[in-house]
Length: 513
Image (cartoon, rainbow, N blue to C red; front, side):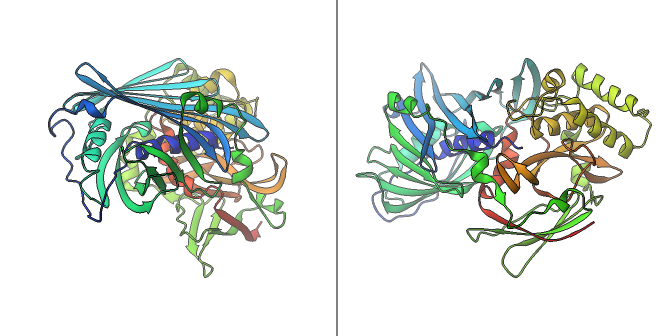
């Protein structure tokens, strides 16, 4: 099943952008900030806003599960902004610890210099360093002993560095604004540009604070922040269907004590139980499934591979999944080099991965000139047999690490298959959604979070689930997102899943064998 703790940790990291980006106002004016291009805007950052060292306890659904630490420092002629989030979460009766941290270094005039991002889940640690120049960013990614270096364009458009956010937002606290809009970067998701909007709502829950409702384009749920007269966030709350996530300002010792518990069980809270058993989904060719959001929000599912959908009169969706159905590869997808590229997670150029792909094709009595569909299925079946330790204990590992360990859950199956496909010259991506299980984590007849693989075969996307032993796919899969997984911060492409977690009801309308 999909490693939901990574997704939650990324969401908290994204919300950390919000925590460090709140405006305080005294009266009823509205202002849209005219942002300037990073590195060109304006003067020295005043040291009166630095240093800042803030600690928060983090809880989900009323259960303390970790802490968040935000820090601003002036180091000579440089300014360093850092965020770190550490969570201990339940996972089907077990517990796991995840950590996401980033450190952004810039000059005192706002020129970006370097950004370092680290993610840790279990024993797997990934580290990405971005080094800025005037025209591009040099990227070094390391995970599981593997290192990948590449270049990427500088973030486009006009945006603020973290210290510029601190200076420019704080300078407007006394200007009487009721709304502030700007753009900044999210270090935890590959330097993605995020659009920020913060609106004054009135008095906060915390004493002597003002409440601001802040949205950012990277997270599908808004966050409420209670801000004191100094502009410090005292409390932030993000409403999620699995339970509110709350960050509460505290001392360092209080924050670190909050990570000692097992935390909320994400799998238990995110599974969807069916009103009646539907084991026929596992062997059928087609299914129509009714899905609606429990809070009334509109649902949008991708129409890709085996899946199509239409709205229904109840305000939800009818989703049709046909085994063997494909979707045409668009011209944009055909030109997208990421689906064949080697990345830190889908490391298709690793010698061990290349060797496994050749072995899989050869054992099926095929070669590189054999039909793509035959090779793709041979690779899928090979991964199913190759991963012999099938459990939830493995951290989200890259393909070459799985090639050595032969261990993992659906995430590792999906990533290894995607890498083997690319090693054979077959474009691939990872799919995420929910899958039907007769029994999982002590519950029966549920849809649980899952990952599988899509491959380009003869100009179309096909679905391949390497966790299945008797067939390549079945109609008990609900697709919610796809990703090329082109860097270590893989979860950015999956952020839309957050609004769906714990927020859907599912009914099997009919099944055709």
